[in-house]
Image 1 (cartoon, rainbow, N blue to C red):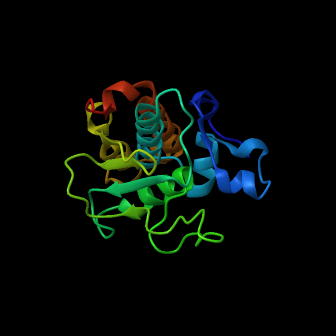
Image 2: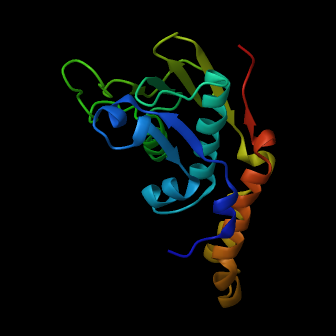
Length: 196
């Protein structure tokens, strides 16, 4: 698979997953998730996918500090309802990273490792997403504002708008990925996390 080089520069999200350890899927249950992994899952790279990845990366770092986040032991609450915009796509990214699912995930083994009921929509929060540790019940809220640095609509018009040319259509994928890279290059601008 050929892909933009900047994918390799994006910081990985490292978690510990007791289910993975229990079943022998990974030594010590350590899960290493790259942006490329998430792009493969989503089938594309865009402002939503990159921003959701960054919300998880930065939110879990804030929530766990120097500890490894505990995959499958994190509650994820989204402000938007399931039917709002692309909330479902964002939820899929967060589910793949945290293991949290609404009602279709892993049911558990002998009362342990349940992933269902850990992801919900329509939360009464002002941020985009809230992560809560199930061991300490400490929470962190994360907001994402891509409009501070990019305007996807302008880039999209270069290929779909009335002034689109063969040349602009040819350059569109390059411009699109340059825009997504801008999100990562300005992560501290587009992501905000209030102090506990």
